[in-house]
Length: 233
View (tube, one colour):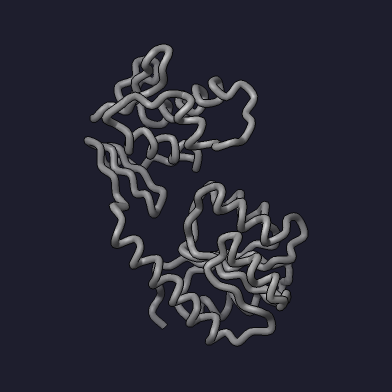
């Protein structure tokens, strides 16, 4: 089977299910990463994103419905297929309403799951083609799908929050982004202790990764008393 570029992540607390899925998905040509808990998944998402997630509802640390809802609140838009023993209509409706793209009940036939995976991935490709996924600002290149950043050809490793902050500034580079606008875009309604200071800390970390001299910034400009603006390099 020809290897796919697609990475599929699977969260399930049943090691037998994980073994079966990992083996069959690899035979089908996918890259696979498995997790037993929702928190393990969330930690991995700070490093890389899947092209698709297969999610059980019954996990030892967080309910799959709550986890899916949290992923959507965090603006992760990769497809999610719920694969669970819960076969009630209300469970299926709740799963789809919280942000899942598909819902399958265990026991399952892998060929059917594979077909549904391919359908979700095709939909994702169709959506991606309609969007401008790569944002270029001077020597800065931001790949919004892969969550990758390059500056003058150099790969820059960013956390998810740093990436979202940089993307926000790049998408609004024609104007100054106020701290309040940044807070609303990146944290929404969450209560932050000393949120203005929190934003400043994230900007400082971002500068340390992007600027030759963070104390003399050439990419992210501070507009005193207002906020920040991204300069074209």
